[in-house]
Length: 168
Length: 415
Ligand code: SF4
Image (cartoon, rainbow over all chains, first blue to last red; front, side, top):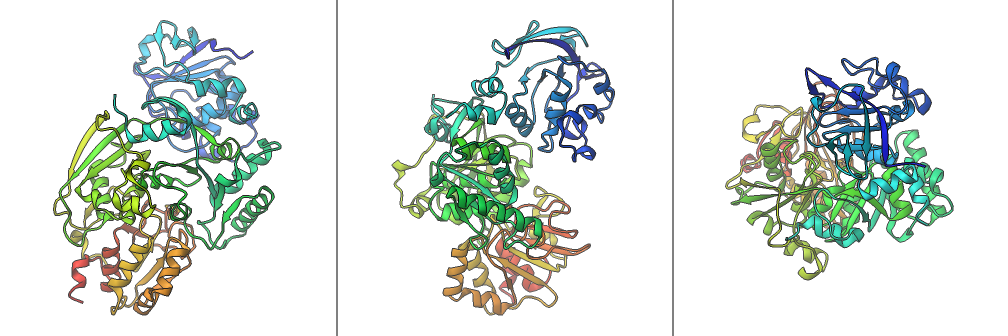
């Protein structure tokens, strides 16, 4: 059963000791691949336009968790920028803040995006195994925002429309 | 602790006590989709809607306004797919003859003070003009609202802007909105609910409020939410007690003041809406076309003002003046009150009600090097063709059309 406790390897997206901010949807899933509609084909292009992490898709393993800076997922409304991570089995994204549409898209697909308002690159070690508790709002020793009620409802249902099914 | 206007509206729509930052389920009074993205909403409902894809047919409808009537086969096909679905589900369509959806919904009294509206139009936050919540959303969220009657929503934090003083004579709501863009750009108000107050807004007409709030999207705001003044209440036949207002002791995340005393007409030069300057600095720019209309400046009052200024004058040789009233009701009044004749006699091309200038090709695009003045809300490169677009109010647009170069409304007096 889906759980609010996740354990996984942590990708610390950093450059020069700073978490990378303003990772936009073109860095996550470039517009040259927008015609792809099959989620199984999306994973291979994840971050292939993000300087320093272009080999992400090759090295990522199911269960991984990603840590980034501010404004993650700014830019376009493309759903693929969420689905590419789901395809690879990435479990969650932790960031200081998100682009508004990206956050809506992720929550609507039951993909955990969690805010850690004052995250720093030095808080974690790249590739360490961390435990994320989305109910209590804690990862390792550090506080995160807890999942909101809405986010939880959709998460457990498996998506916005799956949640709608449970309404009637 | 007192609450802001958006917190009160959201609380009253099934969300319970809430404050900026909370994520809530928000009940939606008006669930709409337009011809743009409407077919995707239908697609989602066909896939996920099950036996009962529509929560409440009385509150759910389509408004066709982008490409009306459809001038490409894909648009026509999408519109018709929506019609078939709507017939099957007994949903109302304001079809290709009705006009811009957001305006129709206000005109019909559906989006009245204190209500909530969502749909696939990024300018639906225009409802802030009447002290109501409105928000553009994607097709998945919109389909979900069709099916369930609600959406999840993160309550934005609220900031307040106080406008001090009164603008100069001949300055319009559009100029005041442009002054806001000049001051705040596209980032300062990002993600905020923005309550604006001041002497100018206390006396503003409903049409002015609509123009003013419509540019909230260009400021990055979730909404520019105005407390309904007497003019707005009267337009809906409502009493003050029936509308929502922020508490006197409401707490704002930030407060700003903007002095608009003696404000002169402004324009937004290419390539973006916050590149704002006084019109008088651009007098040497020759123009090829002028567009009057859009959800920003397409009301009856806008059109009537344009007709008044154009009466007995002529559009300059070589300049195309395109006029698109926002709704069929406005068209009706212009026609029967004789104002259409004033527009026509001056040389204007008057098109059927709708979005006109934004919707690709509907009333013509601009070509490379073509210069246009538009009363619309976006002038990003490529948005309305390959030419250069300047955004301005009605007076500036008319004076420019008559003089053939960018001009202020004051210069018309000499013509
Ligand atoms: S006039 Fe333009 S900006 Fe306004 S609703 Fe229509 S397409 Fe959108």
